[in-house]
Image (cartoon, rainbow, N blue to C red; front, side, top):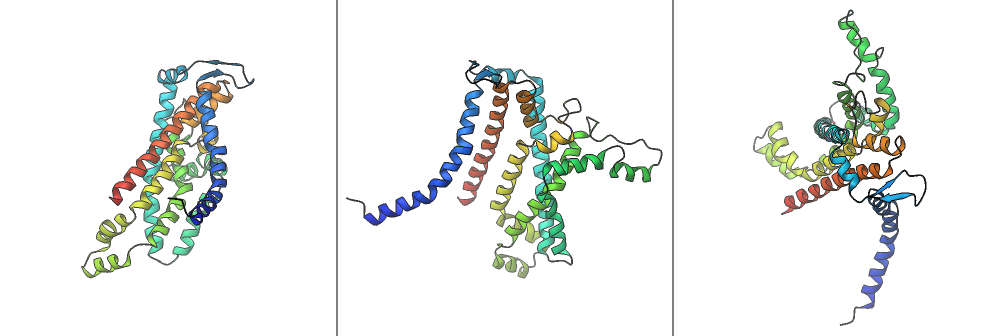
Amino acid sequence: MATPPTTLSQGRLGLAFVLPSVLVFGTFLVLPTLAVAGISLLDWAGFRIGDWTFVGLDQFRQALGDPVFWRALTDTLLFTIVTAVILNVTGFLYALLIASRVRGSALTKSVMFLPALLSPVIVALMWTRILDAFGAVNQLLSLIDPKAKPTLFLGDPDLALASVIVATVWQFTGYNMLLYYAGLQNLPRDQLEASAIDGAGTRASIRFVVIPSLYPVIGTVILLNVIGGLRVFDLVYVMTRGGPNRSTEVLATYMYEQAFKFSDMGYASAIALVIVVLSLSAAVLRIRWGSRLHD
């Protein structure tokens, strides 16, 4: 049976609307990813086209035996998990505070979101000055104990990564807050009213009504935080450059070092591919979790 002309015209119209997005997506995401995957199979310094040697999976075998790679992977996962947990908890709590419309909530919302508008480089420079030997934090500590020596937060291997996490949480808590606040505007009012009539307190309503209703938003926010954590570069590079003693080395900074300091584009591409695989894995888990919620 022939397809009606109207169906064909609607299909072509739909394709016309979708095609620009598909072209942009393919040009700036799919093709570069495929290029990185291809370069990861080469021994190439990145200077001359054609001046390379095909080595297959040797770059990935090198990563498996590279202790710095494993340190970078561990720091990346630690940074991602800790920041995702703190950002979601603080963002959700601030969203509840703003949604309760307490006095000054509008001002609080604006002030909390302001750091998310700043460049990560600016935030990193600001926190570098705040945490240095003569910065605001050490000045406050000196008021508590005038005889105490300044703490080198970014120069101490035990404190450097935690300092970067603090800067990250400070910048992006407002972003999470805004996403959760938007989700709170679409809560089922009938369920909230029913729980109030049944005598449920604030904690019970949040646990049994608010949080379950926000599961789709929670999943999306966590995914954004995880992907952002896996590819973090700006804050770490500006604040510590991966030091001291590799204590804040993450996959992105190690990839940058291999590419532009040691001119090993093949190994750098292999590290970049690891970041891509981890990000895609997080996205797949989010999709599966979302599908289970709808079942």
